[in-house]
Each structure stands twice: as structure tokens, then as C-alpha cells.
Length: 71
Image (cartoon, rainbow, N blue to C red; front, side, top):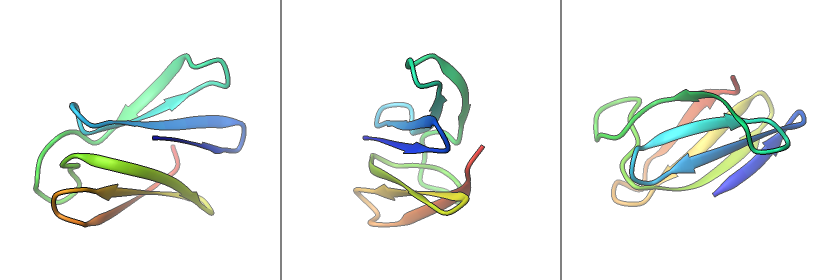
């Protein structure tokens, strides 16, 4: 899944459990988080949304919503 925020794109990778920050032309600028089931990790992320100055990522298996500051 991908969402936009302040002219940037944010995407998730289900396999790596990462959040990617990308330019408008899809060039990766930075990444955050990683795969796993502990705090601050993503386990099969399926959705990302921009909420003000934060991002919210929904994990499929745990049904947990992980919030992180837009970076």
C-alpha cells in the first residue's frame, strides 16, 4: 500500500516489514521499522495512511495499528 504526505510517498513492504519514504518519482529516500512481532515492528503490514504528522500502519496478523512520526 502507498499513501502521500507533504509531496512525498510512503509505502510498506509486507516481506521486509518496512516503511519506505519515496520522492514523487518513486526514488527511495529512507526506510524505518522492520519485520517482527515485537513493539515497533511490522508483521504482514497491509495498509498505510497519513494522519497529520504521523503515519499509521495496520498489521494483518496481529490487527495492531502502529503509529510513527512522518520522517
